[in-house]
Image 1 (cartoon, helix red, strand yellow):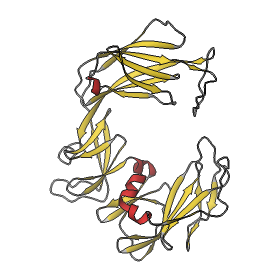
Image 2 (cartoon, one colour):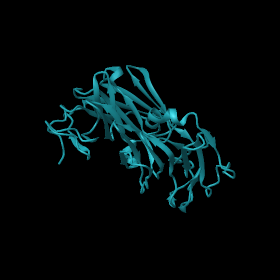
Image 3 (cartoon, rainbow, N blue to C red):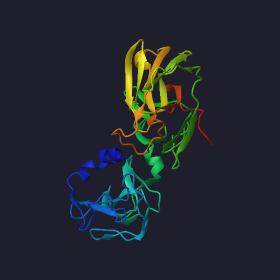
Image 4 (cartoon, one colour):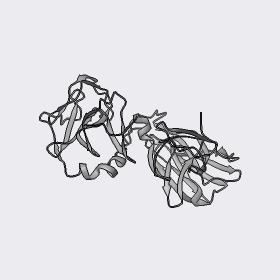
Length: 331
């Protein structure tokens, strides 16, 4: 989201000075004080609010009256884990947005896109600009693309724009929204978004996992057998494990490795031409090792070593274009 904002508004933000209020907390253990800062050119700017601290439960701040320059924002609640920024005296085209409890995302055609999970309370000096307000979740999944004009695609799966067009990299059926609505044949685009569902082609990819005889307490090994014909763009292995690290061998050579970070390990197999047979080796994490994780592991006999599952899923590169969406619109 921040990258989209910087692409369209970075030239406005960059020369602004940073103003840190006196008494701002410096101790990361301070979970009670709301953190704020302002970037301003002396009149307009942005009020930054942070109520997030890694691995800490922050206080809920109710009916907070925030100020920036000569602007006082309406009382609002700042929830634990929230981080956001509000504009003040922001020039939007030919008009001025005095303030809003919403965060700017990008420009879109002759209007602007903001996001908020609260009443945005737009206040104007003059006629309001054309504003589209998204939820934070939709903003996280939004990308601006070019068809006959600018459109905003909202999709939980990756959407990329290349010289060849706009594509979605999908491992399951695609659900997407397009702002503004694509014009129907001979019609005009509407104010509401178009909703589409794109089913993926069938896949016969299957993965067999064969545990090998355990010869050491330091690691365990598994044979992985990939069966079926690949018709998509890639196949991804997802390894759900706990331990110190994991390694993947193809034809007796180490092809990839991963240090455990509390997340599943994902490996694309396209670069190795989708091998039919692989070896997975998972190493134990010794209790007391200088490894720091967000969530502690469960140790047995002083070691953490377990494989919860391995999956293989085909990824398809699906073209997103008005003509390709014909007949897929949801009512």
